[in-house]
Length: 269
Image (cartoon, rainbow, N blue to C red; front, side, top):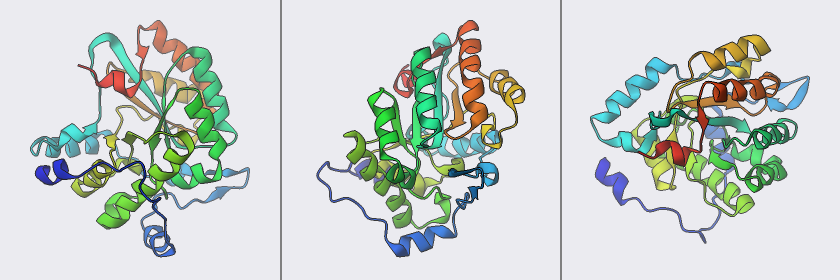
């Protein structure tokens, strides 16, 4: 399997855009972990309360199994622990209301971040993709349909990543380099699909559950409780509680000596 991964080639820039067919849309419908149920109060924000995020124990077990095959080199769960470096990531955007607010908060605090964007959302709100990219933030691939990739065929998983890559490349001028499988669900085939599209899979160490909008105080306490060196923090582009608490969370981490860095910097030895 490792040999197969190494022989896969990266996508070329002049590749014909990969289309998402009706058959593919029907196939991935059964694999959705977030069935795009719209909230009455905000038709643009997908209800994330039903999202099944991988718990930390399962992520540990997955990486332990991978370490025996040397495939752990294609997955980032934690970065270098020296220097109290941490990385912020935001899933499920872009969002016409919340993406601009996140960009403004991060720019004012001089904090880098990675936005893992859903393909069909990027298609709907291209200006939001361009806004984040033009302000220097990394744009990552969060699949086209926000589905459980392990429930798809190899070809369907590849389509999810490839279609999103094509959209993001068209909007930003750059090929995405990082991806995050929805819910943290992956297997060897999912890693192979990502690698074949030039993507490194990024997981997380801290998930404070902001998608449930638990309230500002609870979220802030959860966010700050387990932050540790080399950590990758998972937040969401679409949570009002995240907007409300992010400046305080950033300030708290800086006071404790943590330094926010890009994923590239976090990976450095």
